[in-house]
Length: 221
Image (cartoon, rainbow, N blue to C red):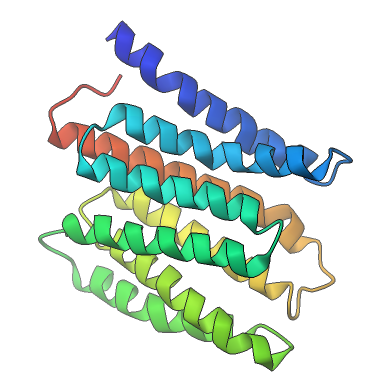
């Protein structure tokens, strides 16, 4: 038990340290390279946490999801397309993970929510940019984002962690897209995007890891 605590909690604490503190330093005068690394370490330590806690293929999948998320966090500071590609790869890996853990029985409301989530997310993303040339690209990316969230919502992972975490991820990305449209001069995205995104990734990571450990009958200290 003590060994498990020593092995797991430092990575979660480091993730929280970098993830929360980044919100307060993201507009500071810290040199760009250091700030970019600071940003990536929040979700990056969630990848390490997953690798150390789950030693099977599913563990490597959720670690890869977090690793590509961290990579996207950093690359998006250099180039928006490069960052989006990293996130898109992460979404595809997450979809694979959730498909491996389908929920056996779904209430009608749960099925309907997942079905509606995808077209609504895509439509909102498509409608946001004032420059209509950007709309198709946002719609295509948001399709993978929304499918990921729908698969998370209908997976056997806890909905109040993994499902809600994925929805928070969707909302944060839509708020990023809103900077290209009606919120381009608003502080709302500045104050909400990172907390929603990081909080969503944190919920996904701990929800998936603890569920997988339960299935392996490993204690969760």
